[in-house]
Image (cartoon, rainbow, N blue to C red; front, side, top):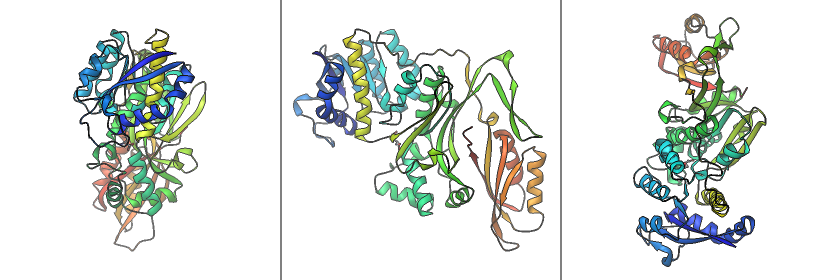
Amino acid sequence: MQQVNLGMIGGGTVGSGVFHALELNGALMSSRIGVKVNVRKIAVKAFDEPRPYDIPRSLMTLDWQEVVNDPRVDVVTELVGGMGIARTMILAALKRGKPVITANKALLSEHGEELFATARKFGTNLYYEASVCGGIPIIKSLREGFVGNRITHLYGIVNGTCNYILTRMKLEGADFDAVLKDAQKQGYAETPPDLDIDGWDSQHKIGILASLAHGFWVDHRTIHVEGIRNITALDIQFANELGYTIKLLGIIKTIDDMRLTIDASKNKPTRKSNIVNRKSQVQVSVYPTLVPNTHVLASVNHVFNAVFVRGDVVGDTLFYGRGAGKDATASAVMSDLADAALDLKFGSKQRVPPFVPHERNGVVVPIDEVVSQYFVRLNVVDKPGVLAKIAEIFGTSHIGISSVIQPEGHEGESVPLIFMLHYATNGAVSKALVRIGRLPVVKGKPVMIRVEDFK
Ligand code: HSE
């Protein structure tokens, strides 16, 4: 049987997980692909760094260059993460024509274009299944499974930490801070938690998926991001009363070559032809979203991830699984390893290229032009005329109200006031809320959460 030699950089949680998975199922994989994968060398931070699975001392080195430069190493895994040395390591291996497998979403998000171009230039490949949603084979599905589709919609719950916190807030009626603290104590959330709860981790992943789905490199700076820090138990409770669950969603939606505008008389999004200036316009964003309880994504709970993909040929599809953890990530790395081994076996290192920019006119639509429905929560003084004043501002902004909830309160005291708004542009709603927030009867900053109808 043909042999492929693997050199690994990183032998911590993920690296040792991959080593373990190869010990467990390496023979099975070989019998499926007809190539045997041998681990030649593993560069580690320290021989005795904590790792969930043992690695034989004889395979370890402290020098990553030994791995990259070893002429017997055919394929390299970069599983150290971070933005610094990881880039140098990947570039060094690619420049030697060696395929690289990485799980490093932050690095891809920042330097993807350069890394993919280097792989192309040196006739090799860069695999990154483990960078998005751990064990869910979403990269392979987009690159290969859906190659014959235009991806019109993609919705992802791509951060397990946020989903865990939002799930517990809903089930326990608890506040964000209390759940976050407990999640940190139990190891479900990092300290500091910002990368996850402020939406940056989701931004990295959604940027990678958007680039693959739409064929132009989506600069992460163009992705509108809001995290879950400001979601309160009250928002979750009112959303539930209205039949919705709040999820942090990554949203990628084609607006095609037509621009969505609002027909104010009907409160419906209509399409205005933009054919003269034909562009592939895409919404790419990450924000907390009201998901109807009847939609399958509302039932994705705890640390699980899910990606809902709509293709113009295939229709609706759903992927569900663990988005992080040593074993789920190892499963994704094994899949990449099988592809790299098959490429080497058949002498075609670029059979499925990592990312091919094929859409010259792709643009990310600015968030203020995005059309959606909205949940708005205000804290107002309960007295005559307040509702009328607020409704007037929405009315003069051509924003329709679809429903209002005001729990019974006492005149003169503060009370929550909830509005569900019809389709409107983000810009129009933001402007109206600035005006509403300035009314003396409105206490605190208005809360606005977008509502997704999945149409
Ligand atoms: N921290 C991420 C999550 C996993 O909570 O889903 C790694 O991207």
